[in-house]
Length: 488
Ligand SMILES: Nc1ncnc2c1ncn2[C@@H]1O[C@H](COP(=O)(O)OP(=O)(O)O)[C@@H](O)[C@H]1O
Ligand SMILES: O=C(CO)[C@@H](O)[C@H](O)COP(=O)(O)O
Image 1 (cartoon, rainbow, N blue to C red):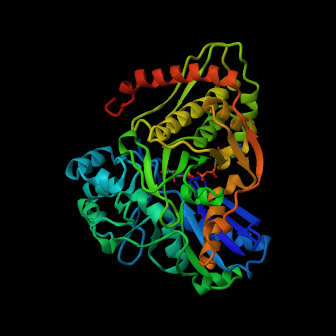
Image 2 (image 1 turned 90 degrees about the vertical axis):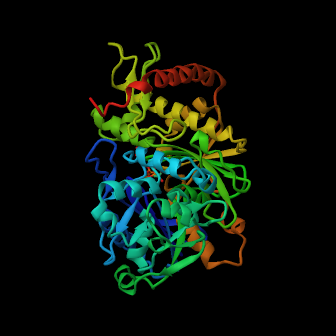
Image 3 (image 1 turned 90 degrees about the horizontal axis):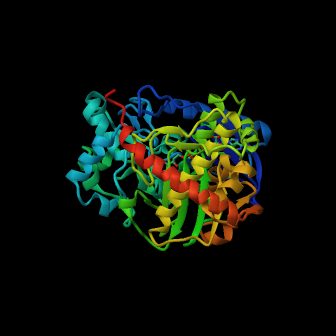
């Protein structure tokens, strides 16, 4: 048996897999995001640990963990978790959807024109490097005390094992990694005033990084098992759904919305804000487009419209009238990465009339996220890569109604598989399984998940959505110059 721990933005998920690769128990503990200033997005890293401990204890109640042989980790990417020499947290973690560091991105790009070549990526505020430059400039007393910079799941690893380590897929999102060579770039680190000693040691996703503290093992009723490197949540989600070979694609509907395609070797197109990162297995890479608020828009809209929860919002959307003028929603509640790279982008409802009520607002939100995802897909396809199949994962993929709508909007066949909603945790567990059997080729241990439902696009609906998508794009283009409201 193996355990997968996924530190998502909305919660920590833990799963227990048996030797047949089936989930025998799982538990989620919720997390909240704090937004103390415009563009900021933070979480208390200690709350990650508290949620993990609680989830593990609950997992142990559901099923004894004495047979567990390894733990794998996965987590929200890019977050800056800063520790001092006594290993105390220096400030709240600055998250992947925090937009405060645009100026620092520009400074890094100007100072280091070779950054795009080394990282394969455009410097964007969500990434870790510009966040550290922001801390250096705005919180110098904290910056000088930084002994270690950790990504979110690697902070959990430190709490689990006492080891400072990361994996290539997550490290690629820092902008300090030479992505083609899979090693830290001292040039990039030095540009932020950092050195190699402040970085965790790098591993491939299927390698053992350390062992569970015996005290924790005892509390959770298990052995002091190996803790495996794991992956950033998107790479881990891809591993969980068997996406490891060139041309395989995945659409993740978590807090963020991610279109992930495994590439043939290292491939980059930084100008389009497409991300080019290492996969969580050796010698494999991938491309992805990232929208910052995907299923997050559903939670926001549910609260806004007085729906009890996301399923209630989805039920409202299904009642939306089709004989009223189209209503548009720009889903940029936390700014946007692909394709706009605009932290100042804002959410917008456009086209409201007396005929629109809660169902139409709900429907507009689902559609708006769909149009933005379709734009990200196009950006990835423009890199010359088009997958033969696309797997849906993440909490948002639980809705069959939204899944079909997304297939219709994107004009793509989308597959939903059993277990897809806990994809990254499953991937973390599968990486742990791989680490225990290094002699086995990954293909043998990563079978595709059983197909639950295939969503074929409907040609007529796709045509109608295409016309609306073009209008959605025009609304953004027209309103983008008005979206920087900081000086008002
Ligand atoms: N039944 C449902 N149908 C559609 N979306 C759902 C449902 N339940 C939860 N969600 C969405 O799933 C999201 C969480 O997905 P998850 O993949 O766990 O995200 P993260 O990894 O960012 O924590 C929530 O933002 C919520 O909007
Ligand atoms: O920033 C990115 C990827 O570049 C996000 O995908 C984060 O990794 C958060 O993921 P979720 O919490 O939405 O799964």
